[in-house]
Length: 230
Image (cartoon, rainbow, N blue to C red; front, top):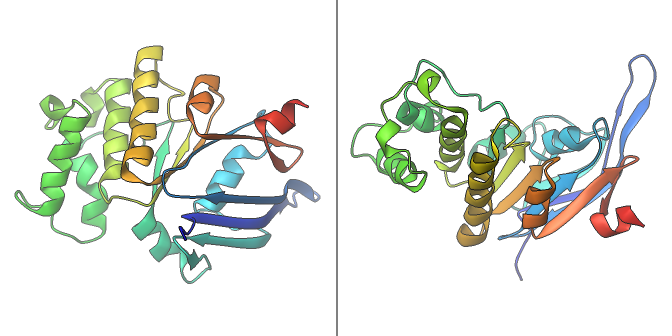
C-alpha cells in the first residue's frame, strides 16, 4: 500500500498577542506521491501559516505531522526538512551576487556535498538549467536576471536534491502571465512525472484549477473547494 508523503492530523495553531486568536482549528491532510494540492482562501485565513507548519518551519500548538513516514518533532525536523522538503517562494530568495548555477548548487554546498565540475550535483544542476531553458544564463549573476528567469532558477534550486515534496507560497505572484503559466507547468509536471508531492498556497484560480486537489481555508478549517462554495 502506498504511504503518504505527508500526513497531518488535527493541526491547531493560535497566537496569543495580545489575547488568544485561533488561526487553525484542527486541519488534517494527506498528500501521496504524484499529488498536486492547492490551498486557497482570503488573506488572513491562515494559508501561509499552514504551509509553514507543514513544511516544518513553524511549530503547531497541537496535532501530529509525518513527512515521508517520519514523525516531525523538535529533534527530527531539521533532518527531515533537509532530506525530504524544498521550498519555493514568491520573492525568489536568490543570492543576488552569485550566478544562476551557484544559486542552484547552494543547497548542495550547505549540505557539504561536492559541487565541483563533473560531480553528480554539478551534472544535475546543468540538467536542470537545460530543462528550465536557462543554460545560457548559467554564469549570469542573479541580479541581472528577469523575474521569470529568477523564478526558474529558484525552481531548479528546489529540485536539486530531488525532494519528496515541494511547498510553494504564491510561486507566480510576482510574474507576468506567460512566466506564471510556465512556472505552474514546471511545478505540476515535476510532481506528476517524478511521483513527488506538491503543496501550493495561491490566490491564482488558474493554478488551483491545474492541481489535482484544491482546498480552501475558511474559519480555521480546511475544506474542499466544493464544500466551501456550499
